[in-house]
Length: 93
Image (cartoon, rainbow, N blue to C red; front, side, top):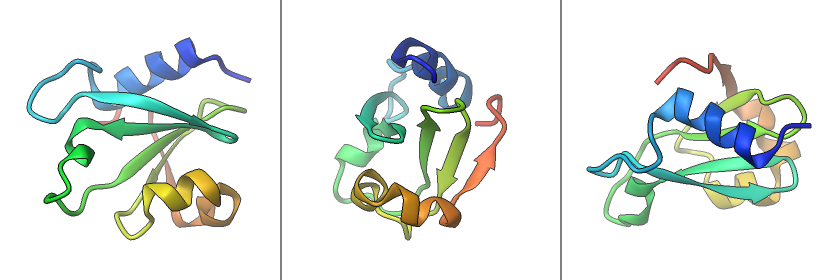
C-alpha cells in the first residue's frame, strides 16, 4: 500500500509539478482505491476532453481514463470502470 506522499511523487513524475501554471497544476483527491489526479484545468467547466489519471493505492500503478469516464464515476464506481482505463508508465506525460 502506498502513502499519499508516494502518490504525490508518482503524480509529479506523470503530470509534472503540482504548482505548474496555465492549468497544468494538480491536486490529489483520495478515494477508496487510490488518488485521482485532479488537474487544475478541470476546474474550468468550459473545457472539455482530456483524460483523467488515478494512482492506485495497492500498487502505485497509474491508470488513465478517457474523457468518456467522468471523475465522479471513477470516485464512486472504480471497480466497475477500471477496465475502461489503461496503465501508463510513470514517466509518461
